[in-house]
Length: 302
Image 1: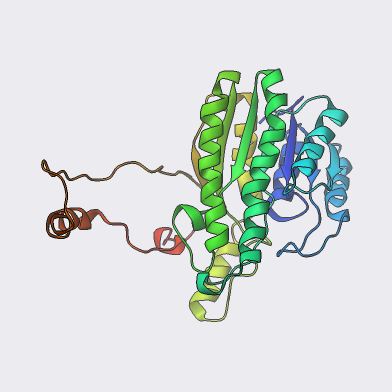
Image 2: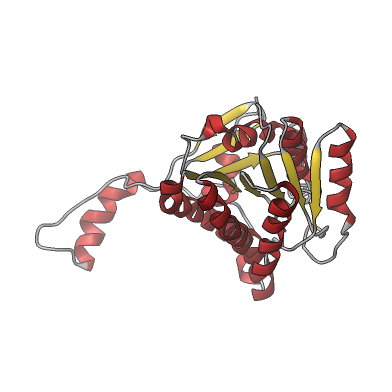
């Protein structure tokens, strides 16, 4: 995929999936803004050298990159990241909202602080960077916004109410951006990535089943996500807008979006008794089970 002349901004690019995406874009010819504050998985401390280390790797193979250590969770930080792109490279063609933290816990034990922190980085962070990039894209009459969502949100997962809420919010945000910005040839899409990274390294591996699952996850490299990101950032992807994709090793999925599944009607209106006796029995066969991501993606990665 040729990204020559393109400028791509990747948040959370100091390691894991973000690092793979930044390096992949640079190898495809893009100039890359590598954004990362160097936080731990929970977002509690910083190593400002993480972004620069990735820049050094890119420059070592002849690529072009610049480091940014601004925080996506603050409006001013997001504006600073975009300004880094336009100041250094003169334009901006694609953003990849990848930055994230985890503070997992069962809902009845989750603190407001842990819920708020995850929402700020994932959902507010995606909004902040996209909003900062919007005027640049409008002026250029084009641009690509790529947001990382998760099957934890699209399907479900245990002990991730904060993360799931943020990631499902990102899907809705992306769709709204796609609708609002299409007149300026700006597209917005989501990717739910399967890959072994820092974000998945805290998955428990105590039982044989858990250890087997983690072993399968480790087979899925973050570099597998890069081709789809590069495609969506390229001119070849200009007609793809408002979609949700999933990448699982060598598998690529187009994910469904919420639509009516089944309906019932009562000409004289519904009462509680009629709902109990007619509506719910008719609809029950179409109910969705309480599944987690591993239940839906039950086969081994291809």
